[in-house]
Image 1 (spheres, helix red, strand yellow):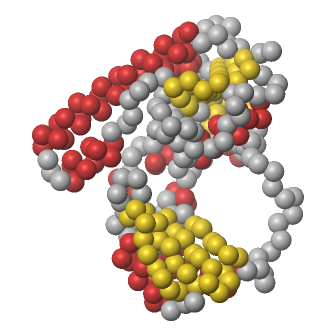
Image 2: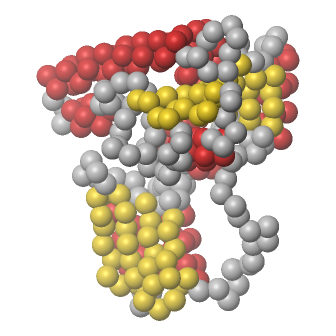
Image 3: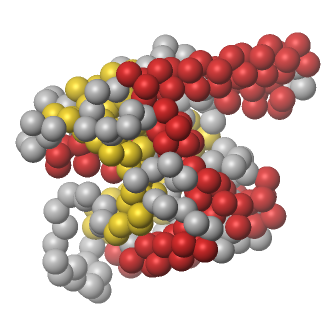
Length: 305
C-alpha cells in the first residue's frame, strides 16, 4: 500500500483544514495516510478525521499573533519587543521542523496545502517522492499572489486546483514563466450534497447561521498577507463593513419560524453596530453577544419575535 503525506499548518478551524480532513478520510481505505501539522492548536482536530489516519504534530509552539496584537493595542513597548522576539523564534522553529519532516519523509506522495509549504516541499523532498501542491484561492488578477504561488511551485510535480477557471489561469501563468509544474483540476473533497437543491421559497428554518464579509472596504489592504489571499468578495463588507448584516437582518425574517434564531459572526469591534441593525428591524428579541476564546466579541445571537 502506497503512503500519502499531507502537510498542514494546523488542524484547527478553517476551510483548508476542513478540506484536509475530507481528503485524508477519502484516501485512507486506499493508501496509508498521515498528516503532518506544524502547530497543535487544540487537543483534537476541529474536523473529524478517520482513526486510521496517522496524525503527527511537528512542534509544541503555537503562533503568538494575538498576544502581539494585544501588546500593540496596549502600546506596551516591553511586551511588543518580547512578543516580536518570540514570533521570530516561532518562525525559525516552524521552518526547521518542516524541512526536517520533508527531508526524512518516506512517503510515495506528499501533498502541500499552502504556498509556504509548497516552497519547502519542492526544495527538500526526496527525488523519488511525487510532490503535489493544492491551491484553493482565486488570485483575482493580483500579481503578487500569482508570483508567490508561481515561485512556490517551481520544483513541484503537480499543482491541483479546485476549479477549471483556476486551471486555466495557472496553466497559462506557468507556461508564460517557464514553470514545469503541471496544473490539474480536481473538485474539492466535500461531503455528499443533494444533486438538486430546492428553492427557499416558502421554507422556514429553526436556525440561520451566517459568517458574512464584514471587513470595511478601506481596511482590506491593511490585512495580513495570509488573509489577503482570500477572494475579496469573501472579505468586503462595504464602506462600513455592515452591508450584509443589514441585508440578512431584513430578509432572514422571511425564512425563520417564530421563536427561531439568527446567528452572526462579527468583527471584534462591531457588536454595538450589528445589535442596532437588528433592533431597528423590530422583528427580533433577546439579542446578545458571545465572546471568542481570546475574549473578543464574536457571535451575535437573536431570536425571532
